[in-house]
Image (tube, rainbow, N blue to C red; front, side, top):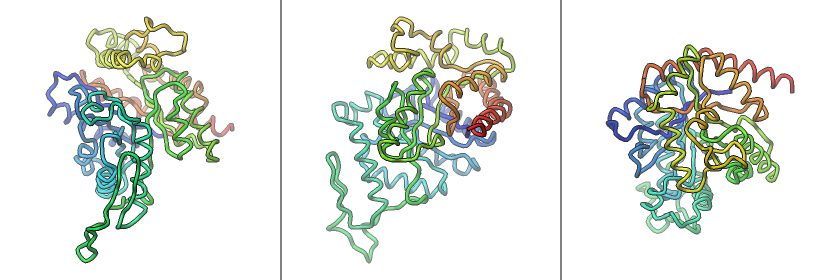
Length: 368
């Protein structure tokens, strides 16, 4: 099981953006040094609380500052960009990073971005599929291009000039193309089933309880079966909110503070999900009433916190509850309100907890 880092990223909007970007870079540099395999970073155009506008541009500043970690977009919001633009940007970054890239894609969940790019009334899930198909066709062919769809066309035909190299579009470093993953959050997600049918990988969101995470894999397996594809749990990553401190009491004391970053994170998520009637994402069962969706309950349900032993025990139980090992555990980055504590948490996860968790997952696989 690989260990990765996932950033929405979500920050206190009152913080200085220059400082925030540098701190996010610092987190990924530390993750690389600690042996994290992947770093996932989201992008949004019209939200000061989630301030990274271009994840590929952000990642480009980290290629030479890191050695091994792979960069994953979490996600490229495909309905908001022309497929040819995405194909070109991704191919270039794949070369710059020499293949240290995973292409996370999605329909976009920020309504102000949907309004900004005029996609709010469109079938964004359908747009994602069309965009991916067009991008892969661009990479699989040479000029001239004549690719027609419902939402976009990719045509480079009349102006092709071979002697001037006018016409060809870049192909990625990884052949035939970088691995592709889509994020899923809703219980029994149709997106997870679609990903299985299309051979994509999936990332389960950290802000949904264990019971819902389990349904993501169930739907993915159904999709694989529908398409006659082999089911491979390595294609499943799961993001979780994790806080590891030297003692259980240290974590309890921190989470009890009114302005702690984890509480602020779930305050934001609760308001966000509530505004769009998606509180079911946060519920451990369909019977859970809306009134029980509180900061305290979300911290209890979805944050693995405490000493290394306590968090290990919860992660072991989590792996067992979702039906066994998966390809990658993604630690969800929170705003570094106390930088030393957050760095220590990453260190304890990488050095103390993950080796023992991997022993557990290896024993499960050996027993199969």
